[in-house]
Amino acid sequence: MDEKTLGIFGTIAVILLGVIGSLVAWFLGGKDLEGNKREILRQMLNFEITLIIVSFLGLIPFVGIVVGLAVLVGNIVFAIKSFQAYNNDTEFKAPAFDFVK
Image 1 (tube, rainbow, N blue to C red):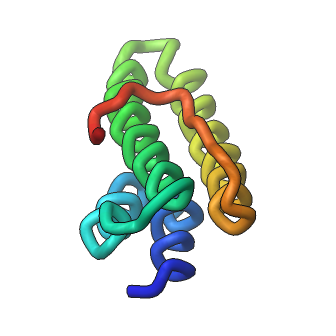
Image 2 (cartoon, rainbow, N blue to C red; image 1 turned 135 degrees about the horizontal axis):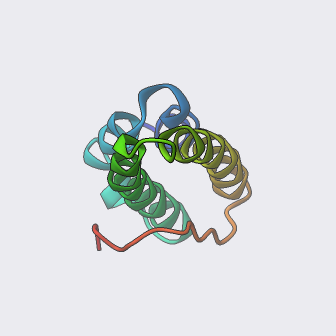
């Protein structure tokens, strides 16, 4: 898979596919990239895993709607920011725990 397709899958496709898009991009060649492009895909994978964990807070009554909206908006915003960073080959840091090193 070429770098452009990996970038689309690892950044923009997460809006529709969630962590599946990041995992596909990571295992199909994202971990073999070098420099900022690898780091951006790694950051988005970590971000998506963090969102899954945060989404469990949505099970709490009255908190679920707020958390659900925050997760949705955050996912879209950081997907777009990471896509821009990937295309411009600039640094990107998502607010996530480091699950994948």
